[in-house]
Image (spheres, rainbow over the protein chains, first blue to last red):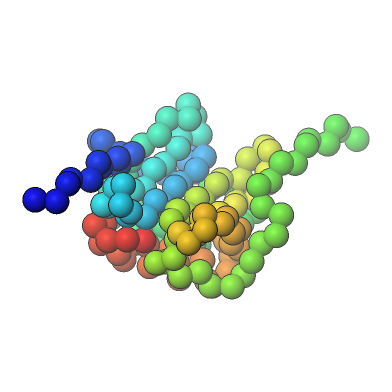
Length: 77
Length: 77
């Protein structure tokens, strides 16, 4: 049995509920890697700086990314 | 004349050239705010950790975000 690698994912709880683009300060998409085997998407909220992990496979995140790519760059997220 | 706000954007040079999803370690999308009036998209490269600013309105970033939302979560970016 090979030595197991230490898994260090950032996200513990992942939510599926929709997040409004305008309420976001930042959206981070982190690639799967040796330290975490899955893609992680972390949303930082404008209001309180709270970070929420979103499910990359959810309809909500697909809609969010679509909205990002449709926005004009000189507008708020 | 009102006092001008100090502008503190992260990106100085913005590139339009395509970035391959698989070569990315992280993608950050930062909302426009009081400190920077435009949306900023910062890609961190896997190879050397280099950060590149991408143009949110470019075709390249639209394709990249489309690719993110199509990927399976248990794969590399």
